[in-house]
Length: 427
Image (cartoon, rainbow, N blue to C red; front, side, top):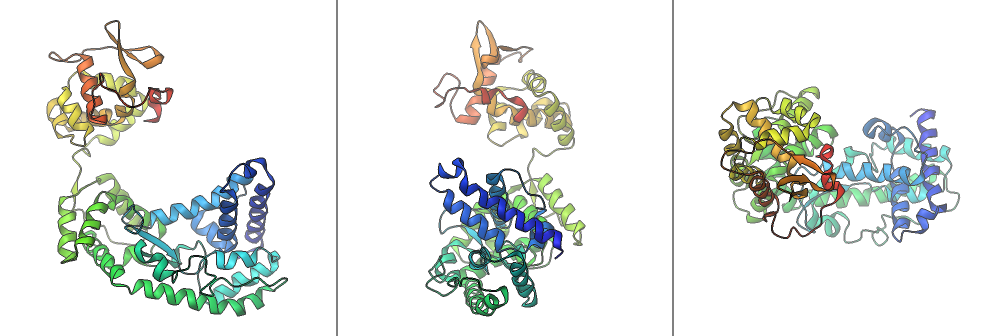
């Protein structure tokens, strides 16, 4: 660690502490918790990790922005590394910090930069990662996070993990005490890893790795690049709920996992992103043959998306001229096959229609009949052009609305149209 990195780290700590003296801080009831959490995360993490793993190397001018920079980086890391991004208290997978940042942070906050440096160097000498470092995060079921990984005590006070502060304590003296806390934390983490529920989830993950053609344990390995885990989580996300059902059902987990893989529609684009990162990090080319990909990903789809971004309104009008309402409804519900068939002009144009409908979906409720023409909300832009021999523009939009909300345009949508609905550029 060079002096510049330590200096940057120190300045970032000072900037976050400045937030405490602002009106913005006083206005929020949960801001004290956010401030303490971000400071502990920052102080409990080696400056080299911030720069090398999170590319955080500058200090924002705004204290709240500085605080959110740290909190956001940690939260994103935890989400990216979940592999199967699930929800529900006690029913999801979570990342556990083996050596928690707060067990270091509350002590280092009272030390000089020089003494903090001694602590960071001492942790390296011990061979122990800590804080936000992704190389010390373990993936475990949420159901055992508090009870096993934290031994029933998130605060760490009862278990002896959180040591009492000693005024003017040096970094070296603190480390002598902290070794006992490290042992307690690592022992609890080891128990969590050895729980049957954790091992069952790892069997599911290992089966997915086998299908991809990557070594067993890649997605849960400490040294696996963060970018690869993040890309894996994104690619596998469509199968997450199915994998939870396999886990909860028990039985032959490998067989159940394979059935979910065989029946899930994955994104080819996400696969290619994962594959590119894997090869960049030294892995062999991943195997696409054991995965089904969404029909919406067709040759020419990427070019079509670029066209739509440049002229979304024109693309939407063009699509409306030769696609029937039933196909719009199906497409908005996730089935793009019928839309492609109806175009009859090749896969590339079919992809254009499909992607157009998908991107225009959030704005259809702002299209209302007025004076015999379709008007785009308060913007007053006319939706012109042919809409098909058998269907009017109103029927087309009505079908689109049903695909999104389950209700037609003439039924209550549950909310008024806002200016945000009209922002096609953000779709």
